[in-house]
Length: 534
Image 1 (cartoon, rainbow, N blue to C red):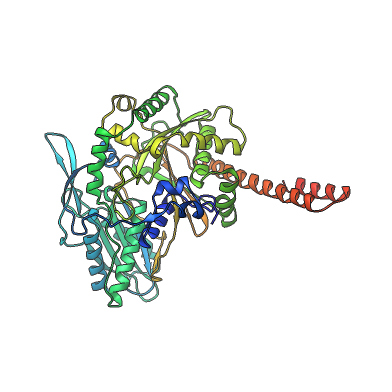
Image 2 (cartoon, rainbow, N blue to C red):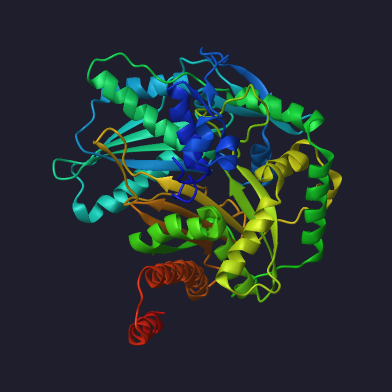
């Protein structure tokens, strides 16, 4: 009852899932309440009863303006805007019944309106809008029989098939999603791949998509009635309300905050030394460095570091990234594009817990690390700077892309690095036959598109381990340069883990000394053991 949600390893994305589960059981909670009152005891006295959702449960159609993150996407002027996707590949334990799979995908698209979205450019206004079409359009499901392909060739063959699907989307004519089922033969599990354009999906949305697809397929396969949870606020309505918020509801102090940050960024130059300053930075140039933190230190990070330092996992990871960039650039002043889930509560009548769409908020964070040396001081210092950011950064994109704030527009310099913590992932769901795999890869982004940053770091927890993915241009950085940065990052995390383990040992020793009268020899022996260990 008194355990702190975040000290147990919770995060903002898990909070969204928890609130939805509570709502399903008639308990009304809001995301902000979890942050303010992070224990069951505190939440229990503030929880209310769920009111009936006043959202249209039918097929939502119509046209709406873009959201800030969608405006950011079109501002990049990609060479291949149709090819900017997210995807998953699922290993299927037992071959799926294709007629039921097709029906499942149809029901999924009917329920989640964003999957029926298209985009159009008004040439006179030079502005893009989004339109949600009526349900009933044919879902795209491609079937391939790869059972004849030899094991030595299967990797390349699957990748080729995936890349064909990746390049098949059309943001203007539709569709914006496409599924691929591959029959792999009797000795290999079949594969189901789903590709969705990033304009209509994000990491939180994927959890909903996969949960609902599993649910629908299981029900249909067992000849049961499909009952999906009620729809929450549509993406079109969210877009309209953001436009209204931009016009009337942004507090003056919030505008002042972002104006000040924008000016700080302008005057504090931050650069990473490129190994090749003339190198291109396109998607085709992308290389990846992967790092993993094993289960034990990840558990200490999630439970002990958060509890003893009173921080959240994402704050620790962001502090380590800021420290890494400061070390790499030999500068105490760094600024980073930080990504958040973006599903903020701007009005009482909005509920986004089960809405599919691209909600991501992306905003610059200026970090001054002058005079910061010890790891605990680093983490607390960065946490304090993050806590000063109003509304978890959501207003920056609204001010810049919807309100076209002059200072933010004039001082708009793209940060050279981005950071995104995706929270905790499960690789399989309720249906034991669905298991997400990273064994097969493909190009989510068109190879001729420009990358948005020099360095992109994405991290998540899966299988009890912390996973980190460092993306960079191999024409700008050598692999060894990025590996050094990735290793430095891990060293900062390991230092934080060692610190709290040492503190825990000291606290236990202190308790032993209070409970027992030890001889001078015993005290010296304990002290020597601690010195050898730390």
